[in-house]
Image 1 (cartoon, helix red, strand yellow):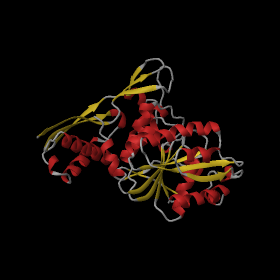
Image 2 (cartoon, one colour):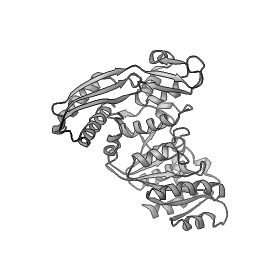
Image 3 (cartoon, helix red, strand yellow):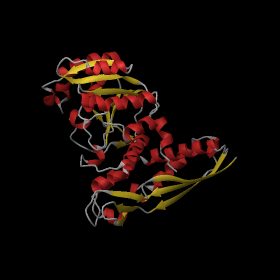
Image 4 (cartoon, helix red, strand yellow):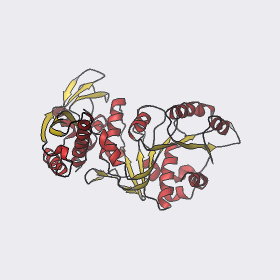
Amino acid sequence: MHEWALAESILTTAVNAAKKEKIKIIKEIVIGLGELQQVEQDIFEFALGELIKDQEEILKDVKIKIISEKSNFVCNNCQNHWSFDDLKKGINEDESEAIHFIPEVALVHSRCPKCGSPDFEITKGRGVSILSIKGEK
Amino acid sequence: MEARIDIIEKRLKNIKRIISVASGKGGVGKSLVASSLALNLTRKGHKVGLLDLDLYGPSSHIILGLENYNFPDEEKGIIPPKIDGINFISIVYYTEDKPSPFRGVDISNIIIEILAITQWGELDFLIIDMPPGIGDETLDVIRLVKKSEFLIVTTPSKVSMGAVNKLLKILKELNLPIIGIIENMKMKNSKLVKDSILKMDLKYLGFISFDHNIEEAIGDTDKLLKSVFMKEFNKIIEKII
């Protein structure tokens, strides 16, 4: 359950960012969840909940919002665009699991569906990110 | 907003020493030095981690004889599998050792992800096997692994020293700790490396002779421990721990 490690990263980053801005109470953290990383949202939310209990005062009233983001890939060779649903058609279960841990290995296990090139970019929906933080000074 | 960098310091905080084995040039024996160092320190009773950050051409797993690429166990992150007693992390667990056509942004993302999710626990040493040069991986280690010291490997060649000198200059300019320089694959008497290193006011740690039988020890850690390479390298290791 490496969702725990990701949840811990999010909260540590949010607390550090809030402290830099002299925010005393964080009211809301909006988290982006890119589809490519296939984070199990239930486990992720559970981990966030458990971690918040052990955190400092600054997080005691925090509300977490999670926004899922669709993935998009663009081929550097032929400029073709495709989605995660397209990508999934060409990979097996183990390859999908590997992408769950390290999303960039999508470049190892899949190819552009149009020209077969391994030279493509993950332009959207890679993994976890913080979209916004709200708080009180 | 990047959400993974702030946790990295915590992931590395129970590691006493982090040693990045680096060189300006490929093919000088960095991976052999890094893997052998990890193996030697483990056999001396230390708790050791080995992180292969050569994402295009990972080699440490070949030197250690790792043949199955099962995913590491998960426990609030990923737990490095033990290979010959070494806590070992490499991209090969996730690539199945297939070709890895990564661009710079992918390299940085992978390094951040690995550093953010790996639970090393308490270690005496973490050895990082670096790719050659001063590209993304080296810059990311400098940026993200603040505690890292650098152990530099070169061969007695003007071409190799040309590239190694550039790496050394950058590390010196940034005031980063350089443990010293190892001259590997020495075949005849020459002061080329030693003189060049001393001129830069850096520590020349010694040389390791070209070991004609080393290829037979690749993938076989027992043979590696008994090799001429390891016998000579051990004298250098004694100086740096």
